[in-house]
Image 1 (tube, rainbow, N blue to C red):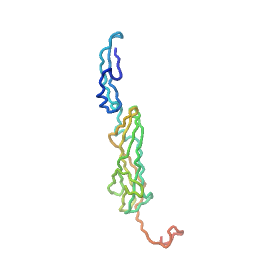
Image 2: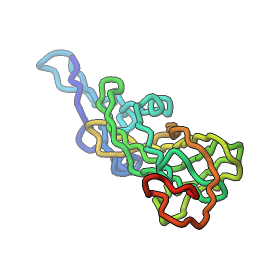
Image 3: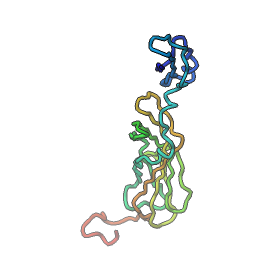
Image 4: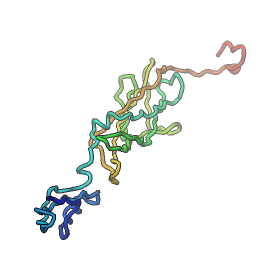
Length: 214
């Protein structure tokens, strides 16, 4: 007959396991002792499982799992917010750097995932070298992230956001980093790069009918 036990028998040394887990949840080793009949004395304890850190028996959220999550692409903001921008003038771009929290199931465990944008790549659609930055940018009058178009034409801007992640498995207090990154993409509506010139006029161009010199 056998009597398995959860945890360690009296006098067992668990200091090594505690040190190795560095504060994480401890899964104690399993021990067992036997006796021939209910009236017989118990035999010596025998270790049947080495136990370990809680993280060692919890599922791992892989980079592939992370990339399959429905991370919403941050909004791509373009200023001026119109269907045209001026050639040889700054076109400002910026986005929202807020982390995103999602939940998923992994091997029967509920997992909370926090995704944080860490790098932004702006392709301005004119053949120029994309802008790669860790700065999400800011609206006018800041000029943290911008581009100057040098030629007329119709353009679109594409923002590729790179995300890092960490996750927490239900029942464990520890947050663990995802070993890999994910990406999302957002594209602006098409707009025209135009040239505008100024001139003196005799009347306001908002007058009705429109003055001939406008």
